Length: 189
Image 1 (cartoon, rainbow, N blue to C red):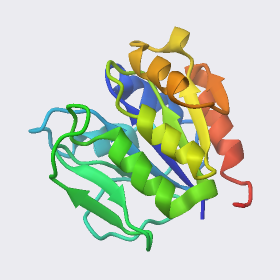
Image 2: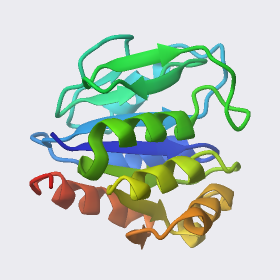
Image 3: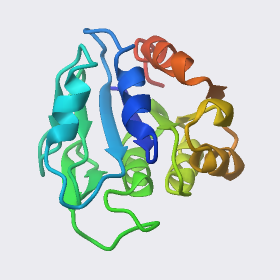
């Protein structure tokens, strides 16, 4: 099974929606999403993204099996992690890069579970969260995709990711979904 881990912060609601709407209804990869949100937010992100997406979108639940063709959204104030046996895990451990959920936490754990079958995507944002996680994905054989800083609402996060590792693709926001759609059908190494 392939997986995609997407991280965004400031400006991410629109950016994530645009990426998800490009994925086909039969997309064979699991999709994991971290959007920096306020700790008291409820499950409105899953409902919001479902309006844009042909895939089922749900808030991640602790110990839920990771399944292809489903978009899992990190809940507010919880880190989203992937366990080695491909189950989701939620944690209220310390913030990472001032964030919970943290993009780095998701990407680092997903990289260990999926290795070369993982693609990490960093979108718009105003922090460095995600840069170390994307570098971990690359170290373990996965792919790294970054939104072009010129198309990002806030370019700090994409620039930090580009500086952290050799990325496979720097794409405009409207190109990322189509790129991921093509990757989803490739056989994992």
